[in-house]
Each structure stands twice: as C-alpha cells, then as structure tokens.
Image (cartoon, rainbow, N blue to C red; front, side, top):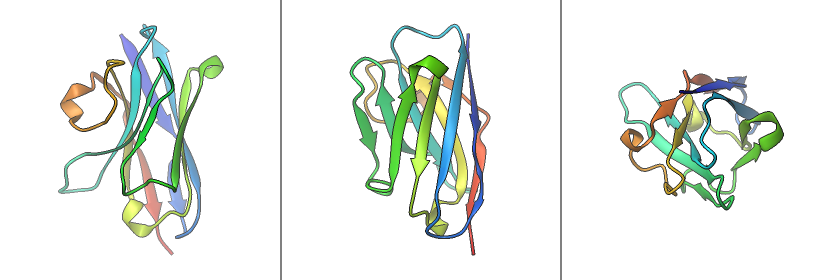
Length: 125
C-alpha cells in the first residue's frame, strides 16, 4: 500500500508563491503518474497538473498553465508543485494522487487510486 502526504500549504498574498510537496512512501510502483487536484467547498475536485514517471511528461490545466510547475525528486520520493502568481481563485484544498502510469491527464478523480490528506492554500490580502 502506498501513502501520500502533502505539505507546504498556507496563506499567501495575491501574486505570491508557494511550493507544495507530496511525499510518497510504502509500496510504490516502479512507474506511476502523480497528479495534483484541488477542491473548494461545493465544487468538484479539479485536476490541475500531472507528471508521469515513465517519461517525465507533464500536464497542466489551462487555469494554472504558465504559473504552476510540477516536478519530482526521485532521491526524496517527493513530487512538488511550485505555484507562482497566485490568485484568490487558487484558494482550495490541494491533494496529490497516484495513478496508473498510463494516466496522462487528471480528468476523473476516480481513476486515481491513492490520495493524500490534502493541504489548504489560501490566497488573500
């Protein structure tokens, strides 16, 4: 069984930056995809970024493209989400999720089998 643990959330002013971390532990597959989702109360969970460990390909939703960067450090078993130029509408609980390596876009949360507990990001002046 694999465990995911997010960290790095907090409160930041508009235009600011945060880096989220997703620490992976347990029985990790050799290859997998790792995605970041976010959710606000009353709304569906939105997939915003994804990275594949087979070829390093990344995906970004239009809402974050050019502002967020997903990366991984294999030596630390950690995937990061660097968030810049943050906006109030980026406020949400952010989750990392692991899925099959063939997943290239975080469309449906049900496709992802392992989840972290989430970390709150608040963008406010």
